Image (cartoon, rainbow, N blue to C red; front, side):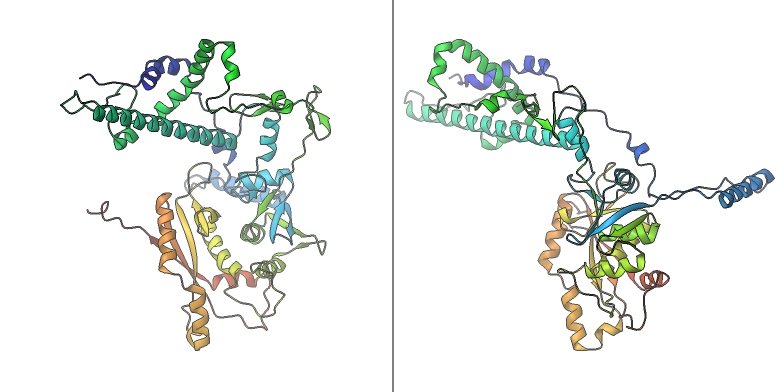
Length: 478
């Protein structure tokens, strides 16, 4: 007995090839030259000396001339400005030049109105039609919406295939003139195969994309066949949709972005007045306390302004300020220095990896403290995820039972927490690194931290890295 086939998937399959030819995949926009944009790893001016060749005396002269030029006319070191926000306990940069410099040279900070790179002004200009092209955020948003629609279309096709198979099985059971078993429903041309499991395997996003491209064409054909009188019947569910005049006045592109809205203005100026509208940048660069202290103390490329006291904060004043704001709510000024402050523990790890040449970013979206990039987030994904745990190995912390209980409460982690963090990092293909920071004994109250003592204070801490790998029995038999 010949197998029956559903007309809908077969028709979709026959027209899939012409639709694919008429609608080729849109090429991706060219990527910027990130090698040139991020050619400087840190916001520091570096002037390398010419090579010294021992058997060539002229090379020694060139080295001496370089030193002489440096002492006579030293190069200018750019120092950027920022301010400390007491409400958010973070540092903000508002100067556009400083924002671009700190991001392009070291990937410091995060845009307050962006996911990572401060690109709100560019996105807003392109959204309002002042610039051409699309931003990386818009490309990601379009790609995600496209995949969402394709998955919905794939689910609809799978449901249709299951319904067709159930109908065929019901007809086979009801018919008494077929003594032999009904052959399975075969729709190989349309991608529908036997069973739910095989249907799930065969229906790919490519077939769903082809079916989605054929949807408007089939709807146009149906509208032409039904005629003008059939429009009054409404949708199959009996519902009608009416748009308001404001919605009907909008003009949409193929990517569902609003191109023009009558009466829209840009900061008090009409969008269609023919002139370039003035658009102010409302985004600023938000630096974490660890990034700000590294730029101020480690590189000397940043100066932080205190809005309450109307003065520039030196590194000796920033350290106790960031220590206080590492707690929530911020604590008062205390003469006793606690060596296991959250800021000190996290900054030691941040300074450690930044000094080794890694690009350190926040890892809060993956449940860790930091993420380590080899060159930066625009070049590749993070390779390592860092979890910071204080370690109280010094004999001072085990002298009394009270100190032992205090240390246990600070460094104890449950096995379920560790398993969850490790599983998340394995899922996103990152290696989990546990950094144990050896906490030194407290500093006596009579010792004051000066600009020279900060280096000695950081030297008292030690960092131990431990790489954790998830052992999978089926994959690691050899």
